[in-house]
Each structure stands twice: as C-alpha cells, then as structure tokens.
Amino acid sequence: MAKRRMIRVDAGERRFNFRIAGLGFRNGHVLVHRATHEPFWTFPGGRAEIGETSAETLRREMIEELGVEVTVGRMLWTVENFFRYEQRDYHEIGFYYRMDIPQAFPFHETDIVHRLRDGKNDLEFKWARATVASLRALDIPPYFIAEQIESLPETAQHILWHDGNLDRPGS
Image (cartoon, rainbow, N blue to C red; front, side):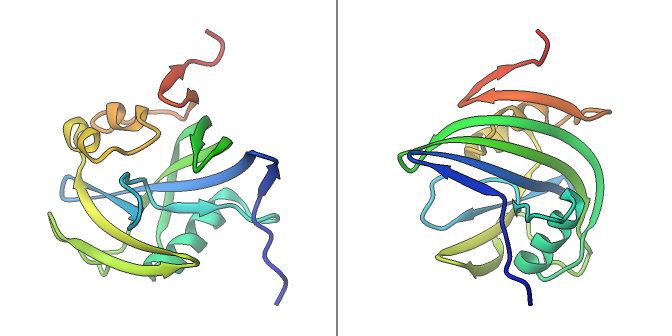
C-alpha cells in the first residue's frame, strides 16, 4: 500500500492545511463532531491527500470516521480560513459540501451518537439543531456557517475568513 500524503505544509509556527468537510442533515439537525479535549465543535471531514479529489476526500474521511459511505452533494463554500490554534497560525483552504448520510447511521436529538479514536484524538459525533442559535451555542468555527445554516447558499460561495472576521472576495 502506498504511503498516504496529506496536504499540509509546516513553516515554523505557521501551517498550511487543505481541509474538506461535509454538512449532513437529518430531521432538522446537522452532524457535528469534536475531539473530546476541545471546547469547540466542527463539521466532520479531514485533510485531503495528494492525488484525490475533494469529493473523494470527503467520502474516504466519512468511511474512516463514521463507517458509512456518504453521497457528496453540491459545494456550499470554499473558504480561505486564517486562524490561530495550538500556538500556530493556520492558513487553511476549506471546501464545504452538502452530504447525504445513510439512514443506517444513528440519530438522536441530544446524545452523542458515535465515538472513535482518530490518531491521538478521541472524536465524538452528535446531531445539533440546524439553527443559528444552536450552532452559535456550540462554538463551531468558521463562525459564518452558523449564520448561514438556516438559508444555505444556492450556489457555491468563496469566503475569506480571518479568525472571526468575514471578508467578501472582490469587495
């Protein structure tokens, strides 16, 4: 088996990352996850590997993390995301897709529905109400998604996000 090559570049205290994430919905909820040592949640996904498309990345990550094959839908956002995390400045390119999660994947309105060990991290997954108020309360970066969760864009949007500040390309 060929060695996996995640797309990530470290330059001292700075890191470039290429991340693909999916928004899966069910019964008015959206799937979120976190590393159990973190106070914040995010949308499931992971780093792209050299040689795979972003849709392939999302399908692979969901098989690895959820144990199910998702259907990758339309692109919602491409995000140039600049933030600080664990004493490092990140420049992340993020692709966010809609995805359909098979009904076989568990659903509960309040409880953790799935856990796994991913490298050094213990991850937990839950369904959160797909509302602005619910996602704001969970602390889910990048924060512009919480503001748009109730009215997803009709066409893909390009977002520049600077650690909580939204810039529109070309503005």
